Length: 509
Image (cartoon, rainbow, N blue to C red; front, side, top):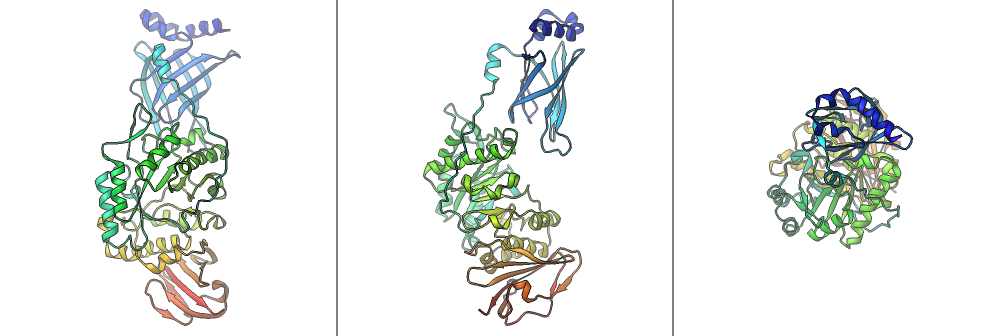
């Protein structure tokens, strides 16, 4: 059978081989092993290999920087072109994409793509040594083992994250400046304590496999010491995949080692973003086990590190997030600084309320307040919706440029108290009327928080009744925006377009 495929492949490339020198003709022998010196950045295909299978068909792999081995299916050889399919990601209705490898005198031209990335690159035959160096070595996942609660994150984490404003363009100097601003502005004293470096800090691994920060972060331990000296905590970011979402080094194959490195640096918070790991971990079992692997590795360091799961709400993460050591788990994809996107996430994709409570929280992503894409009323709705949802409050703007209005909103102690309430209840909508939604959240001291949201494009008004607040007799009503206190409900509450009325109501027992 092997001789059959050798003969077939000779026919496939015969017309080219006749015109090629002897060195070029040798490139078409089976097995085919083609390497690419200058691959497209994503997915970074380094090698193509094709060989005959035991059943007489062709089998093949692409080996990539982002996804490791990418199996080829439906391989068809015709003339001097090899056509095949490769699994696709995150494109509804397009589970695979077709690739081609065109063999010519100047080399092998690979064309294809995955998700939003297109590939066009030229390769050549790999030597045996090159083939060995490019061969992927899988890192198997350990069996699943549930982790007990560790007492961290008894209220939703509060702080700042670099991604929304700076993306991967973040550095040591900026992180220090954000820490200074959190202190000088009063945000730290309002409860914001985590300073989280998102993607973009990673360099390369040394010969010992240890991850090094890139040149923008000359000394991560010194940075952590500085942040700690300001009465704050430092967070960092990684991925279970080979590459992070911005294309930096992930933790694949180095999970325990990276956890020890983070602990040695003095890290207090890890956001673990699925990113390229979604290629390896595409079902509930494998996603759970990869997050459990890092959860166990963090615990093994002995350092208390808040663990943020970011796998976009897949596989009902709230139902198992605690069991892998998670303290918060994303319920959705990334937020943007637009009211429609924020509202869709906050009202419709904020997780199962039953999953939230002390030690574990639904995370609808970071706050956009201060970035300028929404109106004051819209940002007020953003803050109220996150507080009513007992969501983590992680700011995402340049703290040095915080306007007076954004500062007042972010430091509103009465609203923060709703989010941080010790009872840990996630509020829910108790009545919907047209574009209006009335949300209720029970509080530890017996009070109830009420938020009346107007999702419509025009002002509106509505009254509250006993069913809305869950009690019949009202003792006091505090408006959380104005601070005014009354002893009874208003006949009706006026809510601006995309705005919110937020109340704390004490009832008679």
